[in-house]
Amino acid sequence: MSAKKVTTATLREMKRKKRSIAMLTAYDYPTACLLDDSGVDVILVGDSLGNVILGHDDTLPVTMEEMLSHAKSVRRGVSSSMIVVDMPFMSYQVSPEAALENAARFIKEAGAQAVKVEGDRYLDAIKSMIKAGIPVMGHLGFTPQLINQIGGYRTAGRSKSDAEAILKASRKLEAAGVFALVLEMVPPLLAKKVARALKVPVIGIGAGPHCDGQVLVTHDMIGLYPRRVPAFVKQYAQVGGQIKKAVSNFVREVQSGKFPGREK
Image (tube, rainbow, N blue to C red; front, side, top):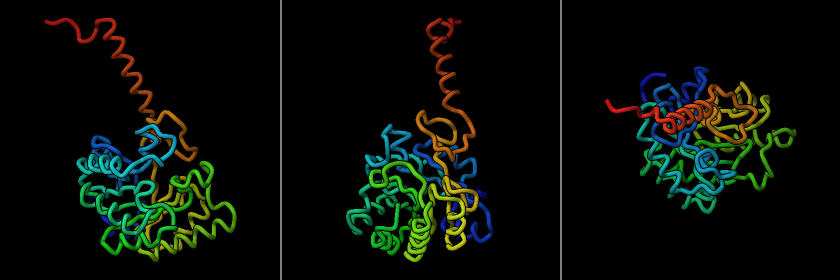
């Protein structure tokens, strides 16, 4: 990726040229700096911060103010990557007017370029945001904000009827004007069908190799989250273990008097 700012047009062009999109999550300034410097195309300020940062069991407790605060931190560390912010639970479900007002805060206050909305139930809200000039990324398949209704973490689209519903929903979202779609935890052949059916980029997470890009939660990918890591995640590092080793060495040296050492 070049040093130029990644935009919605960049992502469309990447799909056209069959260049895979790399997307990761960030919730703070130093992580955002590292991802941006490493050439990540899209940085998602995900409501997954509820799990990996705030320690909740799911994403539902995350608030607008928490998302805004973390999005502002990320924005300060980014010069090239595109920043997309998750609309948290109940920030867009109440009404199209509330959705537009909340989405606008991410653009105006946090400096994000786009927002992400789960499911296809709130097309009026999505259309109102897009009409106002706010790019919206869709999200289908497993949708974490419906965890209580779904009844747990499970692959979506396994049955023929469910697969057809996801394909139909993806077309509805594209028709509504989303610039891209995240497809989470669906069978690879369904993801392939959706990616081929849509003109907008389809970014997979636990959806196999046939999407136009891939996204992971950074804390899962680098081994920094101490709880359950999804089976589809490839861990490229074990940063948590390195931190524990460094901290243990520090504690030992402080207790033994080795650090900071004698004054000269």
